[in-house]
Amino acid sequence: MANDPEQTIFALASAQGRAGVAVVRVSGPGAGRVMDFMAGPRPQSRRAVGRFIRHPESGEKLDRGVVIWFPEPKSFTGEDVAELYLHGGRAVVQAVLGALSLVPGLRMAEPGEFARRAFESGKIDLAEVEGLADLIDAETEGQRRQALAQASGALSDLYDGWRASLVEALGLIEAGLDFSDEADIGAKTFADATAIVAVLHQAMINHLADGHRGEILRDGFRVALTGPPNAGKSSLLNAIARRDAAIVSEEAGTTRDVIEVRLDLGGLPVIVSDTAGFRETQGAIEREGMRRSLEVAKGADLVLWLAEAEAPQTAIPVELAPLADRTLLVLNKIDLLSNGNGAPALPDDMVPLSVKTGAGLDDLIKRLTVIARERIGHQGEPVLTQVRHRRLVEACRDSLATFLAGSRDEVELRAEDLRRAADALGRITGRVDVEDVLDHIFGRFCIGK
Image (cartoon, rainbow, N blue to C red; front, side):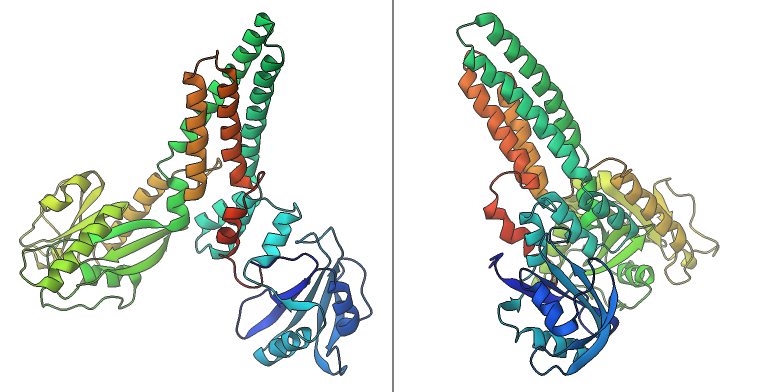
């Protein structure tokens, strides 16, 4: 990613397409010139002012909007920033972007380049950047809350506190090395460092033993619809989605590929996948469909096994037996039972319903919501939301474990254990050289962020 701070960049910072208002952001040493040429005179700092937006060469009026001037360092990027608030018609936006491209020294920003400049100016750290990306992508209330906490520095504060303790412990070890000829001092500093490391090691063990709840909330709680053919899986998917997401037919084997719908249940993201029916088959296509179904079920947080009420096949296939602890039995077509009022006596862990009449559907959705909320848990404390974070915390934990298990006679090695642990934590927030992960992180953003 080109990121020359001497260059001035610009981009549409609001969504593409027709809108009431569009925001164009300009950042870099030439932002002031843009404001002077196209919307002068330059207004007072951080004050919204109405201006005509003019072509920088011809002086033609392109739009009448609002402009705000953010001089460095008090801006999102830490650089001089000009923001132009325009009418959101496509022609207006294209005219202004085209005019900006004619200004010498300006170029279109690359994806995530504004956020990267903010990081490199020390305005935000890497964990906060990732939280900001998640906040932009948030679809549910739970995701919004978690992403906002991370973007506001909750996770960074936790890891920075741990890293400060590690640095303290490392300082004690280094002091012991400096006074290696005085045994009493060396023994005390090592003991003090060990006490700090032991507390940190346990804190990281507890932090990692979270059931991946932060990652589930970020990515979605996955539910796999499984069962024999014609049990009503596709109909149930359509009923839950309140639209025709899957083909419904009386012909067995209609669903041969996995179909997904995304739901917002009580502010939690839930992804429900319709899968091919489990049965013995000779067809190569259906076998492939069932293979995919099994893979989806293995990766799901909850498996729904759907059976028919008249001839319930409640025993799950042997392929799903390892998933029994996260399988919920659902009995469909209870409207076909002789009494017409519901299913006969059922186990407590089975949910009766009729997709056709809608009976029991609300109860199933409530059950799904409760299960998802129990799995994700309370989000009061900072949680791991990224695989990258988890791997680095695991690396830190392992280095601390090596320190605690190692010999105090090898003080240089124990100091290296702590340096590696501190380095792993620093890579989460970007407190060390992390050039190898920058492009991956900032590339997730849209152009104008």
